[in-house]
Length: 120
Image 1 (tube, rainbow, N blue to C red):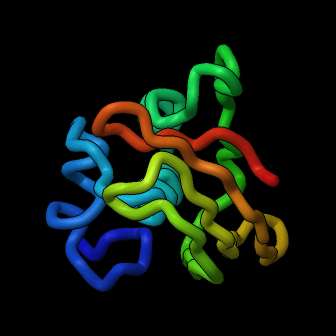
Image 2 (tube, helix red, strand yellow):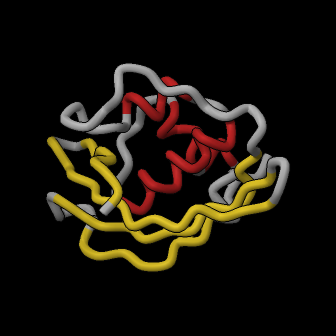
């Protein structure tokens, strides 16, 4: 199965290992894995990869939305040796209507792990 994040890789070679507990090497890879988690309905991973300072207690996904394409629009920092990063993206969905969510997100790295903090 192709990875939902649009990398062109298989899920098993892309976001699957991250969903299984492997650390994301960059903020962009964490963003891609979070998109895949939305596409696959993996609430546990979304909460686990959300920074504790902004993480909600629970997360309810809209079953009426199907996330089908991710475009990375820009990145700032967020590399393997950075402590923070910013990823701008557009996530496309289908529901009652087609739409897109455009967001610029902030990420931080603690130890080996990247975390989503919040939208800017």
